[in-house]
Image 1 (tube, rainbow, N blue to C red):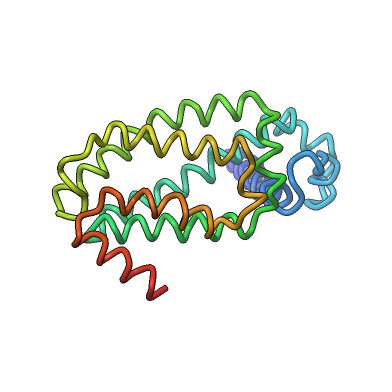
Image 2 (image 1 turned 135 degrees about the horizontal axis):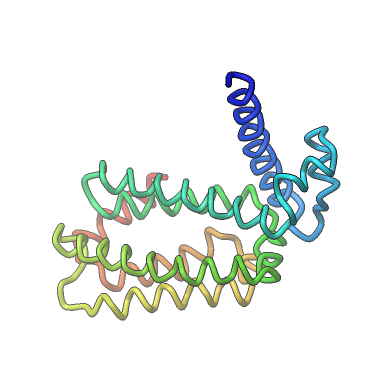
Amino acid sequence: MQEIKNISFYRQSLKDRILDTSMILFAEKGIKAVKMDDIATRLSISKRTLYEIYKDKEGLLFEGVKKYHSIRRERVRQVAHNNSNVIEVILFAYREQVEAFRLTNPLFYSDMERYPKIVKYFEEENKSTRSLFLDFLRRGVDEGYFRDDINYELIAHMFEALGKYIMSNQLYSKYTIEDLFMNILFVSLRGFCTERGSVLLDHHLNSK
C-alpha cells in the first residue's frame, strides 16, 4: 500500500513539474517554438514518460493555462475580499498583469490562437469574468468611487470587447502593456469614476 502511495505521489509531483516547466518554456520562447522533446530534455525524463502523462502539447498547454489563470483569479479574489476599495483592487490586478506580460514572449499570446481548445476555454471564461466584473463595478458604485448613472452592463461588454480587440490585433506586440492600460483601460475607467474615485486612482498611479 505504501509503495502505491509513493508511486502516486511521484507521478503527481512529476505531472506538476512538467506543467510548470512547460509553461516557463512557453513563456520564454512562445508555444510553437517549444517541442515536447525540449520539455523532456529540460526535465531529464524520457519522451515516452512525458507522453504517458500528457498525450500532446495542446493538452499540456490547456492544463497549464487553466492552472495559472485560476491562480491569478484567486489572487485577485483574495485582494478584493481583503482590500477596502475597488480602486486598490484594480491597481493590484493591473500590476499583476503588467508583470505577467513582462515575463512573457509576445509569441505566447499569438500562438495560443492556433489552439481551438484554448480559444474555447477563454470564450467560456469571459462569460464568467463578465458577471464577476459587473458585480465589482456595482461594488464601486456602492463605495462611492463609480458613478451611479452609468449602464454597467454596457461597460462590462465594452471592456470585454477591448480585451478581444487588443489580443486579436496583437497590440501587445506594438505597444507596451503600460501604454495599453494607461491609454485604454484607465482613460475608460476615469469616464465612470466619481471625483472621489478619480482622485484616489491618480493618487495610486502617481505613487507607484
